[in-house]
Amino acid sequence: MLRFLTAGESHGPGLTAIIEGLPAGVPLDQRAINVQLKRRQRSFGRGARMKIEQDEVEILAGVRKGLSLGSPIALFIKNLDWVNWQDVMSANPAEIVPEKEEARKLTRPRPGHADLAGGLKYRQADLRNVLERASARETAARVAVGTVARIFLEKLGCRVISHVVQIGSVAVNSLDADYFKISELAVESPVACADSEAAGKMVREIEQAREKGETLGGIFEIICLSLPPGLGSHVHWDRRLDARLAAALMGIPSVKGIEVGLGFRGAPVPGSAYHDPIYYSPRAGFYRSTNHAGGLEGGMTNGAPLVLRAVVKPIPTLRTPLPSVDFLTKEPVQAAFERSDVCVVPSAAVVGEAMAAWVLASAVMEKFGGDTFDEVRRRWEEYLSYIEQA
Image (spheres, rainbow, N blue to C red):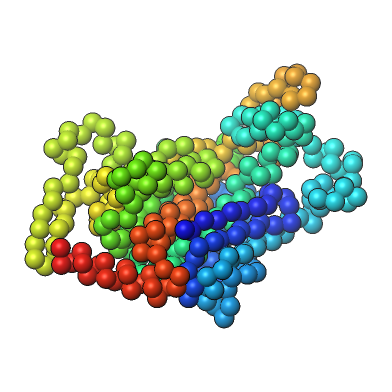
């Protein structure tokens, strides 16, 4: 069974992740992980923090000579901003400078953040104890973990890609390019949008929002290619792959809605036009002429591209804060302002890819198992052969 944990605060020494269950023999190069970490950082609309951090992963355990050992893998990403926060965030009380700690204390909860609910739940007088872990900074660790899963899937011939389809009021109407071309165009775009005209409008909308002290949300799409039918299961609610993918994506900060295939867009469509007719030919086997289901039926992959969309809300940290109430005095105040981004939709797409890759890699391991990658691949190939002959 694949599983992982992350630890670390936004302004702590760094982020740690432990991965358990990856079979031995998976080629892991930290440079490939760093490529994805930089994709998460370098998108238009990010804030000043990204000018400080230069995210790079250290593989501390579980890998030797570039290959996984089958033992737990430990990953670490250093927070370069730690030097500016050590006298406030240190685990050692002797290193805390009271005056600086007081200056950084947070008692004005921000609407839309975990501040108030977390402060009440964990009885924290300083809401920074909630903010630091609730921060989306933690998603850097998830990108590192998800890239390990991505590498595992790619060695089996699968691909996970994403692109942005909406930021603010600017949306992509339709794209004629195939998925691989969409991926190439999205990587070249400052907002990860494959439509250059829409991308230009998105950039201008972000610039206007920054000038007004506003933030913007949007929608990104994830596409997973070359998955065989049968990953996931229909037999129990918690084994349905669509439910697991939705949970993984909803766990990304600011994600507030998930679509599989047509999703919400299919609400006005009658059943005869919504569902994908099934055909068969000796050369292609079972196939569908459309993919409104998004590659998932009955909680299982059906062999078509897996297509997911996620809605990202606007970042709730605003330069012109909303009304709030001081957590300690209960007096009306303006919410606190912390250094923040204007738009994180392109970065959230990278996190979404990572989480989708993780869930899919977990489903592959559940179905095919094995202590070594060669075992997994052999069983994978045998299953593909069976599917072709069905």
